[in-house]
Image (cartoon, rainbow, N blue to C red; front, side, top):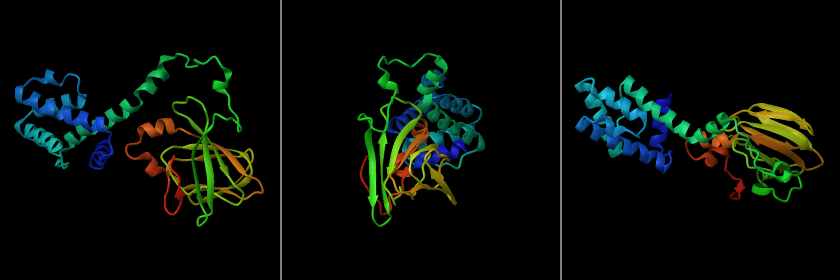
Length: 260
């Protein structure tokens, strides 16, 4: 699967410019290392290239396969019908990309050092009326009966992403899906939440789990504004997802979406 994920991302130009350039530069160094029989040239590149070098020197056939692979990447005309062994090696690019995107988080988790660096207690506390909260986006569509707003909370979070969602009486937010998982904490109002084919009644105090990639929507069926706290792992998922995350997260359709 790693090979398939990587190739899909490569063909769709879904990698960042630096990620893509590092791979191209690595294949340049690989061809030089093979031509000069100097594997030390690969020092500082991804271990994938060292693996490809060791694979290439095993036989003439394998050497031709690696050279063809390298030339394909460098010419943007790569043939991805490669051997099983090359699939496994190239698939490691995916693991490399994923690790590098979250490496700083892993380091902080394992350092066991407190990240509570602030003296002012307001850095750790907020409320629905907090003036520091900022409007992330808002949508309104009479045709779809959609109207809602989303505010971010003023916390310096790295993985969790809490947002205050407000939905007026008789309205809903968009029917949408996204890569991150979310917990909804309903603070005010009543109504229902759609999760794929399910419909769950909610009220103040309800806790709802939204799995990754499920279609979901919150509907205000009460007499007061619906207010909910949505806590997602966007800080992790947004880094791990390869591609246009925002494009995948919401259905545009006829909704008159205002930019973030």
